[in-house]
Image (cartoon, rainbow, N blue to C red; front, side, top):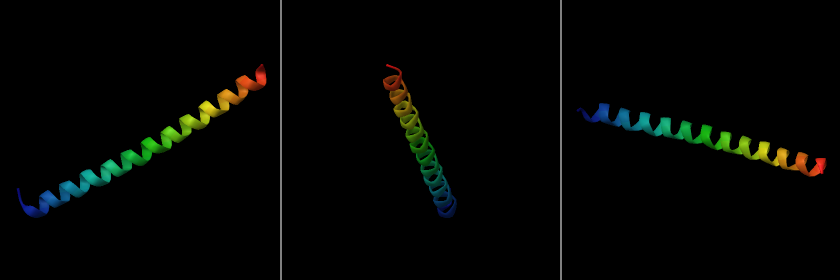
Amino acid sequence: MSQKLEQMLIEGYQSMAEINLSIASEHYILECEVNDNHQTYTIDGE
């Protein structure tokens, strides 16, 4: 495999990993907000 092609593949994998990481962290933050809202609702309901 040529050096340039290998470099392109590595950069492609890195950018994909960064995108996946940002999506995962956003999803995690959203889940935390939903859980927090759910907890406050249950406390208000009691």
